[in-house]
Image (cartoon, rainbow, N blue to C red; front, side):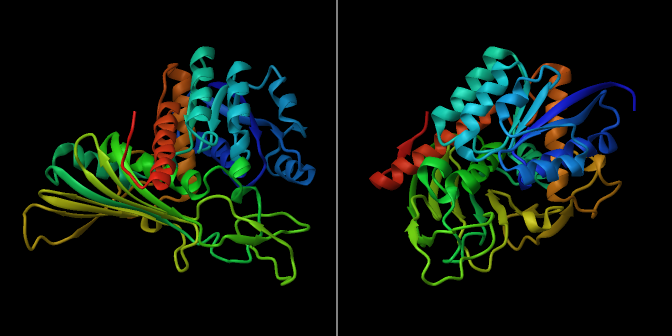
Length: 387
């Protein structure tokens, strides 16, 4: 493929950093028409074994323990930020101030002020940025959006959006940064509910107000004395010291969009029996749309009447979002990693066009505003209006 090379740095060599690296590598395979070819040239992670493993897998030249050193390299043009949430504001703003384009994971910091600070830095620097709201990229979600816009299900009246999973369901799962307000923010809100808010906004429009309830179901967790900490695993020692879980395991909320749609919204990181049970049901005056991430190539559609309407399965196909960049026909499902490649393509298109594409920092700010309102509502027990 002809075109210019784009030297990339990745800050954070954990699972998400690997997902970004794979997306950069795969981009030319699926988007040969793009005239910019990313090349991962640097990685920064304070854990040496993680950084070295990353470098070996992807042929990375420069390995840094300190992310400041990566940003000091003038040859790096774009940076992925996949570090812990508490670092997103500092690193994201520094990337922009260094004149480098930004691909940053959600949530962009620990609240609205963090997300807005990164957005301001990006705008001031004149660089491009995309945010890791990957579920909106699923071709079946794109199909749903098009059907809603076309009026296929009439006027949208109500919806149920859920993000339920079990990664924190084990009560002996170790106390990590994810469970503290200072490092992990508001737990399941930033981790999962941020995606849900983005899906609601993407499909149904901006939010007007909400009322919410939250809970911590596992209030104490054991403190791990050694070893890495991921989503899985448990501390077996029954005598291990424990610490307090400071942030939310569960959220339920009623949302109201500016167009008047009522939304029942639920997110949990401790839902036994659920593994990435993410999706939505959207009801209109003339139909219903249902999507489940675990069968992400399928959209259940009931339309064409008012009563006794059958539900059919519509398979994502070329013409639905970016499906055609990966598969030649319907019924061939995409993967989670494919959604990250689509996100990467949005970044490269943004750089080429010098204008935002895909999920932007404005979307991150709007999501953060909604989650801050959830915290306020859960504390007060009242409806909270959004900006």
